[in-house]
Image (cartoon, rainbow, N blue to C red; front, side, top):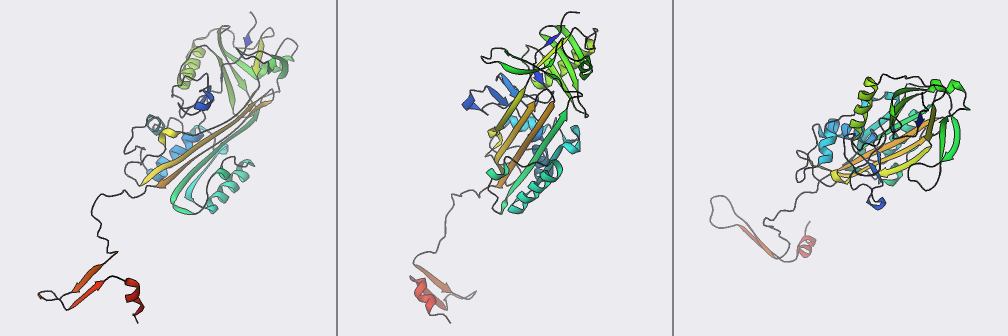
Length: 347
């Protein structure tokens, strides 16, 4: 069997994608997507389920129906409303969520919650105004994963990646590696040197799927392709002595917002989404994977619309009469030009 040289195409069936217009300042070189079926032309794409969890909490517990806007047809909202990812798609130990009226007490509760559950601090809470405001609602979530491979892979020599100008750090398995490392992974399929996938095992229930491909489709289609090709593949799925594995270290931090759903009044409510935020902190090396992601939605009550009707403001000279019902003559009359002087005479 010829050598199996595995570079990398997609990390995790759950990681890599962004929303259009999300990072214009980087010319869309990295795009964070709201859902796994969202299209993007960015060369690097990331998706994580944290914002979808926040959206689900906001939709199910506050709006209590699919979110639609009065003056705008949001395709992002339409995609998120499908709730293709839910909390029951991940272990309860891996996420934390809370919502409530914006207040210092809510911030404290979230900080204590993520400290107790994950021994973590937040990267986003201090960027928000926590002054008590009964007209503002905040929905928050953190998704946290930290796991080790069955055995730490070998650190390999730095090398080039695609068209990158500088060498990157790699880890994996080569001819000098201990053959015990072969048990770290399973070959899902190997059709040719540009079309293959492996499953990497960890010490927990998590698995890492790596898929090498030149196709340009959405994440949900990538995942379906893996399933289809794995089922069809009849070759050897054991990692053999002559096979080699080469994976780059990844160290990513990204913050984004989903402007497409901000600033529009939600149908059937007095709310509009004032701010959205999602962060992704992802690290992968020869020992394992660390993922920390936060997301939040801040919604506020809409201001009352300005009406074009008449304003009966008695704020300058006016005359007042008192009259009994059925009478033609008032029994009291008063012209008012100076309220302050009049009020000084009161007892």
